[in-house]
Length: 136
Image (cartoon, rainbow, N blue to C red; front, top):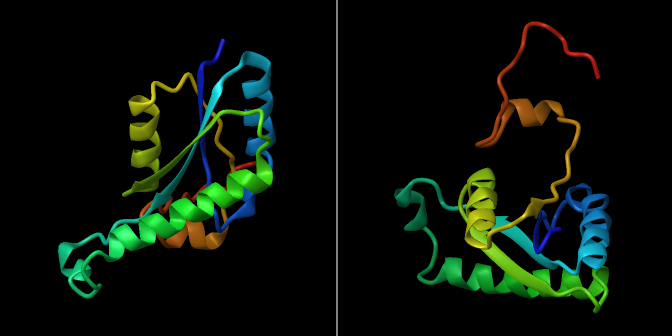
């Protein structure tokens, strides 16, 4: 049913994969799917920021993150699952969708989390405040 499954993870946040990874692996085993594990590096934003980093910095960091991603997969994914390691650069949600399109993902297994106050106030994916509290 699923040929290619995409699993976006944040290597620095266990909650981004602790529940999603076992689910994705179970689907891979059940359907003989390929697992594509992606992590996204943020870009510099404005080009003026990039000039403060040494030449080739982004390639060096990407290589280090790819090495960490390989280590993560070795530690957490059984050898019977076919895995592709992907390091993308840019806005997280845009890159997840772009990688999903590029690999023709049949399924994207993505963890959810309960937002903290900082999620509403900080970052490129900051959520707007609502005057009406929502039930959880």
